[in-house]
Length: 102
Image (cartoon, rainbow, N blue to C red; front, side):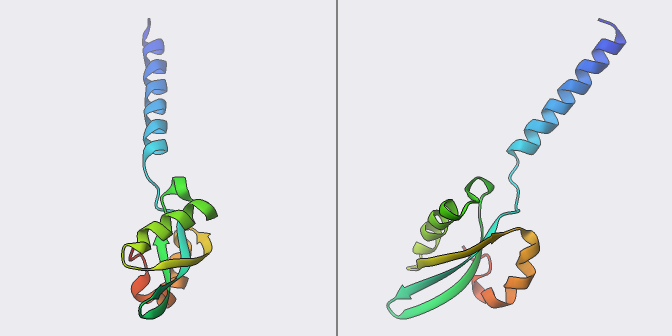
């Protein structure tokens, strides 16, 4: 195989490696805002949580959030929306201490 063939193989292998790295590396682009309650004492909170990309659908996010917040006695009421990193700033003040807490 000549130099040209070797160069094509290297380019192909580099492209495959870059694809595999980008496909497997986690992206921090999925967030959800939600509302939760606790019963004893009765409290409500609004929060924002990062969702793993592979769970970035309304149903999957709801299951993920419910599990995460239940460790401190919270019950998920509703997932308001799913959004990207650009939506964090506008929600940060409202979420307060529950911004990315879980």
